[in-house]
Image (cartoon, rainbow, N blue to C red; front, side):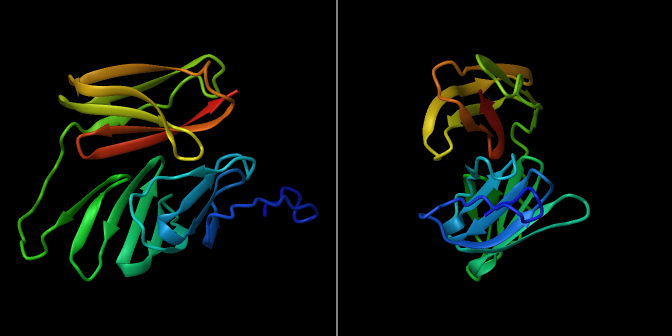
Length: 208
């Protein structure tokens, strides 16, 4: 339930398919709940619409908090930890079977018997806010690559279903723009996932 008038009136939101374990009010509009099977739901309009985030894990998530510096931390079963700042979420799993690190939907398992330092800076990206947003015709997703890399850009609806693949190819270093035609989709909140090498960025697209 959410309220915008100090508790005089409450709005009920039913998510029968989810089990919630913790909730965090980041600010007056941005709220997050976490639960079983790696579930994270976020709202950017004080509960009017909810978006399922993509974590690529199935462990139950039990706690969420925000630091003074703006980082969000989510803790779950078997030593699972999430950290996010802005739109990027990184996964670190300090379970008994070793260490697992990665980003949303991009998880790699490292062999714990090796102490070699592992570095991966393939195609590091800097994303810009898509514009216009909200959109009633088309929106432009822009990003910059530090070096040549394979780029995949997908659009998901609020249920987590893939609805469009906008890009899936090697791209040169530099500034890039991809246009998403929103005319054929119903109004609501959508999510884009931009995968570059082992890095993943996501963002919200609001269609009027």
